[in-house]
Length: 81
Image (tube, rainbow, N blue to C red; front, side, top):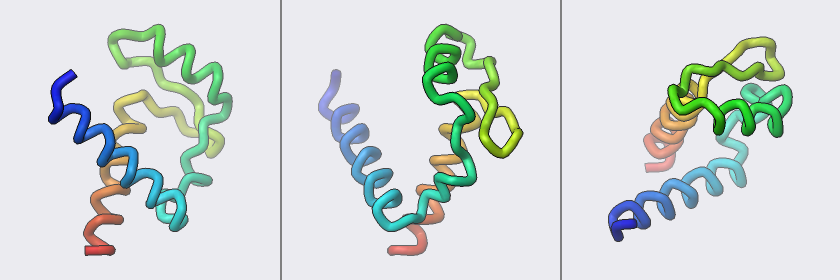
């Protein structure tokens, strides 16, 4: 792993942790219906096409979930800056 990748991963984790601590992640809105099954399904799908059920009745792919967290992080950073 490169130093740049390690830096990005640590900053990403710090941002998510801070968002959760401050209640800014809206976690309850996007909870997985069955997290263990979702992890298995997503990890066995190299195409990133499998959609896993959420508690609110929708389905999201791993990419959808990452995009949602990215947008939430951008809004959070804009708010605290």
